[in-house]
Amino acid sequence: MFQRILVANRGEIALRIIRACRELGIDSVAVFSEADRGSHYLELANEAYCIGPAAATDSYLLINRLISVAEIGNVQAVHPGYGFLAENAHFAKVCRDCKIEFIGPPHQAMAQLGDKISARQIAMSANVPCVPGSDGLVDNVDEAVRIANEIGYPVLIKATAGGGGKGMRVAGNDVSLKAGLKAASAEAEKAFNNAGVYLEKYVERPRHVEVQILADTHGNVVHLWERDCSMQRRHQKLIEESPAPNLPEEVRQNICNSAVRLVKGAGYTNAGTVEFIVDKDFNFYFIEVNARIQVEHPVTEMVTGIDLIKQQILIAAGEKLPFTQAEIPCNGSAIELRVNAEDPENDFRGSPGTITKLRQPGGLGVRFDSHVHEGYTISPYYDSMIGKLIVHRPTREEAIACMKRCLREFTVEGIKTTLPLAKKMFNNAEFVKGTVDTTFVERTW
Image 1 (cartoon, rainbow, N blue to C red):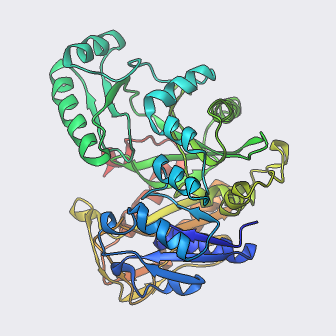
Image 2 (image 1 turned 45 degrees about the horizontal axis):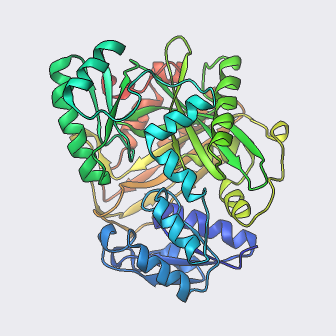
Image 3 (image 1 turned 120 degrees about the vertical axis):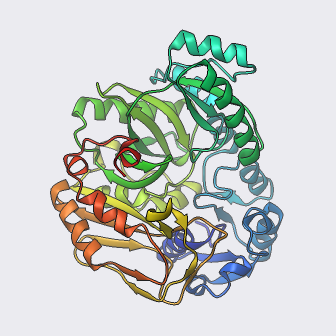
């Protein structure tokens, strides 16, 4: 087992990892930028080191500084959390080249699955359904037009690298395809330093269903059931839940088994998420793999009782999974709400500033994962999420009722948040029925 782990991240996920380390008897070494100096969660780590100015490009994204802290802190492993360098195959390789274990998949598997074209090829080899599209990158406009007319409009232009909705455009005809190709490629180049794009058939009004997997280094791979993440805006998730509502049991089993086959075929280890879209007829198609822990991992923890961060650490240390597939339960219903420092009444403009009052909800089955507190200043330099409110109840109906009660209790003052929109979402009849899709939020509000 590791004695010391470097937490190569910030905020809520850094705190989550520090707590898991503490329970495992492992020392944690934290890092922070000048913008995060003085954050209370840093006091819970055994050591903390400043790695640069506020901008992530000058701090959290600098591999050489993180490796320097790892060496100074005498750590045996690095946990990257999510975001920043969590899916950077080069960072994973550098860590291991420096004899420091990277708590994540092999860098080769990460590189293969991080590229959506090679990920599609792995999926097809594992007999996992994929959305019809181009066989590889689209190199010119004429080729794109030919492929689009073959598979039929509308089509989705997608960047082969990265995620988060960047480098994506929907095209309904030849004219919009030509404009979208240029825009998507330019956006992908800026965001991921990779301008490559490809085409997929655009599945209208799909659901977003993803499967959590764990794979150890002894050949054992299991799924921890599925999550529905259809409530999203501009490809950014707002609400996630497990299990997915109104999903036929046969479809559920097939999606979960497909995720396991894909991961085995990729030679993947540690935690990961295999993402699918599901159409109105319950046909499902693979879209990508997130080779890291997900923001929404708590809903899986609540229904299975399995600590995913601890399992990541144990797998990286060479431990076997302590359970079989048949031993993984799915009890009750868990729902997570992301709370962002944004103004939903003003096109979701970011709302940095100081939290002057914070009253968070509680009670049976309620969990609030956050690093903020009264007096905490939200920085404009990082992601706007200030916390995740998770509820767990025996049924989905009870979970929704619990969340609505929590939202009445939840108070944040000094900044704008997405809580007013959350109240509308949880009172919406279509959401309550479990019949929403990935375009629902933008169509409704």
